[in-house]
Amino acid sequence: MQTYSGVVIECQGRRYPIPPGGLAIGRSPNSNLVLADHEVSRHHATIWVTQAGTYIRDEGSSNGTKVNGMRITAPVPIHAGDQIQIGQTILAVLPAGAADTREMSLTRVRPLTSVPARLDSLQPYPVDYNPDAYVEQNLGSNERLVLKAKLHWGMFVGPIVNIFLGIVLIALSPIGGQMVGDAGPGIAANVSLFCLACIALPVLLFGLLSLVGTAIAYVTTEFAVTNQRIIGKVGIVSRHSLELLLNKVETIEVAQPFWGRLLNYGTIVVAGGGMFPTKFPNIANPLEVRRKINSQITRLNKG
Image (tube, rainbow, N blue to C red; front, side, top):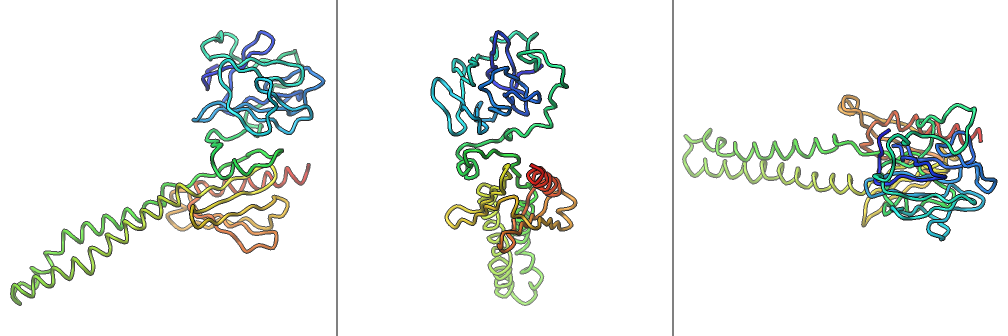
């Protein structure tokens, strides 16, 4: 099996890759790495990979998780040479090159008769986990990410079209003067200047300002679902945020214009907890995002 990070986890002489869905560790038969240790919780810890590196998080276990002897209370990065203590079990973090590729399948520490865990049934962290982002910095001690929605590139189409239209109008401004050339060179020049200053340049300026505003929104907007709540944030200086417990959510609506249905993006509107509906526009794949939110709410209610 392919290794998806620069490290592998060694336990009792066996080496385990970190799959794209994350490496779930615990006593539960549905864990990727099952530890037969009475001090290990059923869902004890998760190791996952991001573009920034490899991270581990304790999943609210009874006895905690230690990295290099220090108990962790938030997600922390791990590197080759680190040691992880889960219960009485020591896991070594090794460079991926140290692993024998013949041992890279998701095996278990002890034989089990249960069906191996399906990666798509786990609830690991997204690949784009960012410990410096607003959502990640506001996670509770027993809270973990289930979903981070992304904004769709279609939000840039409008500003780019306006910029293109403004450039075309600038190029066509002299034609306006030529159309009234018979009225005299002075009038023709004035008409060309009018077309440039009052039509072409405002359209171009509007497109540029729209592009800047859209880029800021693209960078600063966050929308995520955890195992406990919905978290959203828009803006930097003027910030608008939403934090709503899943059991308080009343409605989740999706609004898609024609281009949104065509390109698969739209606005998610969340209401509940006595709050006015909050809109998060330009969310990619909004129907799937709503489905996952409803699925998490159902799972929470059953729990």
